Amino acid sequence: MPELQLAVIDVKPGAAMESQSGLQMLRPRIYGAFRAPPGPKRIAAIVMHPTSNFMGHYLIGPLAERGICCMGLNSRYVGNDTVLLMERAIQDLGAGVQYLRAAGYEKVFLVGNSGGAALSAFYQAQAETLTATHLPDGDPTHLHPGDLPPVDGIALCAAHLGRTRLMRDWIDPSVTDEHDPLSVDPELDMYDPRHRMPYDRGFLARFSTAQQARLGRIEQWCVDRLALLRSTPGAPRDQTFIVYRTHADPRCVDLSLDANDRLPGSVWGDARQVNYSANAMGRTTSLTAFLSQWSSRSQADGPANLARTSIPKLLLTYTGDQSTFPSTRDAWMAAGGARIRNVDIVGGNHYLAGQPELIPKAADAIAEFAHAL
Image (spheres, rainbow, N blue to C red):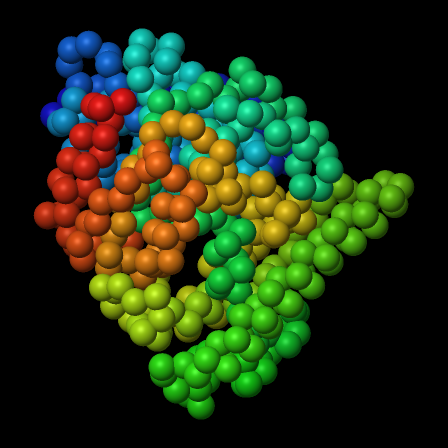
């Protein structure tokens, strides 16, 4: 097994106070870990998530054994998405691509795992045609084509469709008071025992409509609040707030919906407990970060961006995943068109946790794809 090496990569400064570290703001850096196989530097991969620490990703070693240098790269927002801007995250990903190109690798491709899938699609779409000149709040992104060198392929695995779609599908519509995490309308509470499974179609329709209504209210409040802040002399340009209860997807408990091989519950455990937890998806965010990541104004929708790319793609569907489903696979496949193919990793859960026998299957499929680029 090749030795694990550390990459320290300087990146461009972003927004003021995007880090609590003065040193990081003065000289922003991102970090990666990789294993470089011996021999010619023919092909390398980057696996990156907007916030997760992928420096210990389970594919780094197996891909190195198959002749592919794989770097697990962290964004500047690792471990904290409170002020995360997807437009800045792709800039960090571009710095990683530049690092590998400068190291001499002939081909570079992206492994979009989980939330890294939409990130990878957004990156390549912008690398091919830069349109994200402004953030959803109207500020310039200061992105330049040189920040985003195109890659040669994208392999997606356990691939979410993007944070904007996750929030749309997961936000709890039964919240009646945005300032009270315990407020609940039982008629819209999927966890209320009065709503038995399989869920009634009428309930699911009301539930989905109410999800969109709540998300729309929060999004409009963000827009209005930003307008107020930016028209008030001396006011800050942004503020943080809390979005309570963001894990209410009926598919977590009703296995007849979007059926696959999954077990009941969430990738993080009991779905109801996660829904009420103090730290969950999108729980603490800023106005600008909400618009960039979680709102309908986000530019980082996975399938929409993948459809704009021209390179080869591979999709690995983990059929036991509790957070990606057959409909997820169908959306990616439709977006990829003639340049994508799917490989099922039968029984695989979202993290392949406790399934060491499935990791080589995923690595084999990715290596076969990569060596054909």
